[in-house]
Image (cartoon, rainbow, N blue to C red; front, side, top):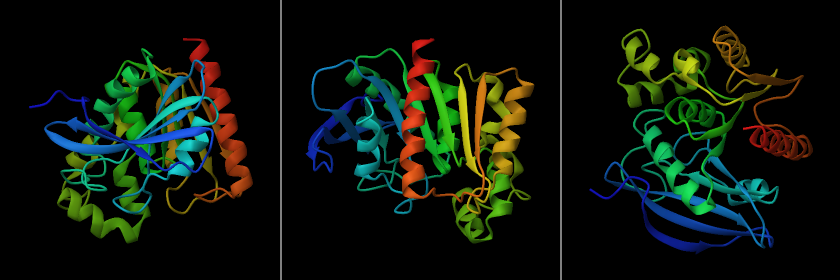
Length: 263
């Protein structure tokens, strides 16, 4: 079996930003060839490393080149794994199952590319669940941002009637039938293992991932004595309007750099 996190192939990818170069990378994760997108600022400089963890499932919420280029243009080397089973990658996307290992192994890949000993984590929606897990499973983390993020998969099942059939297919049944599997995939129960500072962002009118998930995460972090900050955005939905989105991304990047300098 090839070494986890080792690169199989790198190819140039069209960039929407003249100041950012993109490359698609095929790498190894648990014997599977999986893929991701790398964004690097063009020009000399010292850049911190950011692992971007996408939301959605399969083609919904797929990694967008403009999105990771946006973060790279703020001074980061960014890698965004597609997760197994996506865009020609081997295996099957599991929404927080063994696909977590694809993100975990990409941390080592990113550290080597960026020549950094630790990385920042950013996750949106389902990616929030993945980011929290990386903070639990890896000690090489500078900061964690979860934006409109999932913390408890059973809660998502209850909130999203439209996702129940998909979650049953991926997991085998409902939280009532398989409570232990839903709990095993939910980082909310293991946040006491997180060492990095956490930033929670959520719109109060989010109907995709309800803000109660972030309230629950906040309580768990507080009970565990962890460092965290909350940005609850009044009257905003799951996807923020473009101008607020851009401002929020700039603020996130400044927050991560500030936290990175303190560690």
